[in-house]
Length: 212
Image (cartoon, rainbow, N blue to C red; front, side):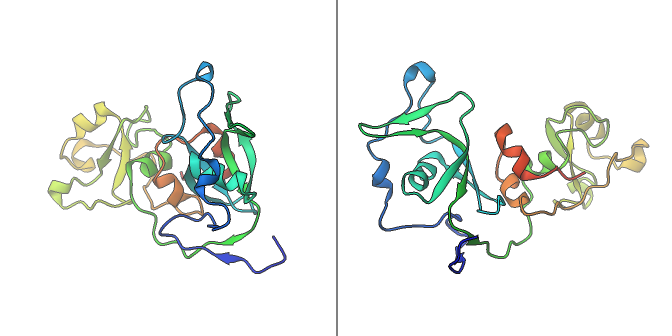
């Protein structure tokens, strides 16, 4: 943690510190990797941003991550597994997968984790709550048509076969039981996971274990 006081960063526009001295135009002349290494990455690549304490903060667009690196606001923790590099006339920047801020930021209070398909799949480890096979969809334990809520406690990952068999029935009517009681996830990384579909494998050590 740096000697100066932590910087308070708002949640509405992300957690990365802004700077007037080093705008995004600082990387305007940096192009996509050589085509022999694959398609351009601007616009679709996301980068995991860590605090100085290695706490996960958010998933940034690649361009914003490169701005932080070029301006000395962050350092690369993990580069692209295939070794992609962005080039300009005078510089070369490793395409990052995980970066870490150089200065500590104080994270605002985190509200309840939003219920999303991505977050639910992460919580249930992509396994069907009824049979344990690979999950492809989500299911309301108590169907919405029978008063069930759209909540963490009433939603589970589900395979297509079980989803079709269950339809709008109650578990008691089928003689089924849940493998694990569904609960709202807790942890510093869950707001991030709720908004990320397929996390880069290099992110996983920083995101903690999925909820049981």
